[in-house]
Image 1 (cartoon, rainbow, N blue to C red):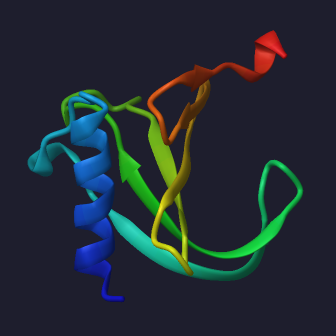
Image 2: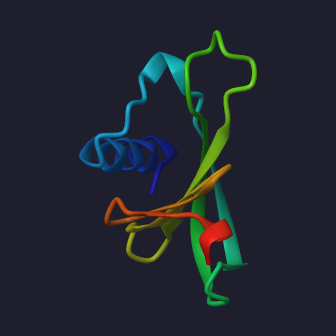
Amino acid sequence: MDEKTIIEKVKAVLDILDYELSDEDAAYSVSFQKGRQLRDDSVKDIYLVAYWHGPKEFPDRPRQFAYIDAATLELLYILTPHGFIEADGTYNDPNEW
């Protein structure tokens, strides 16, 4: 799977979730990680897509990370500075666990 296809998949999911993110504001990077331990302690091969959230004018804009299952190419979750966005669009704040 090429990086462009993976990035387009992440953008499509963010669009479905009605998540505002413009192409010019996001610099995406993709890395393949073999045997990555996930937050549920399972281990999978994943594509980790990192991107900046927010306009370039904001120097403190947060970096977010989308975890994509390498076998199925399904979004597992998105890690934000304040919690997780699940594949179904729900938000989980670890401070509320």
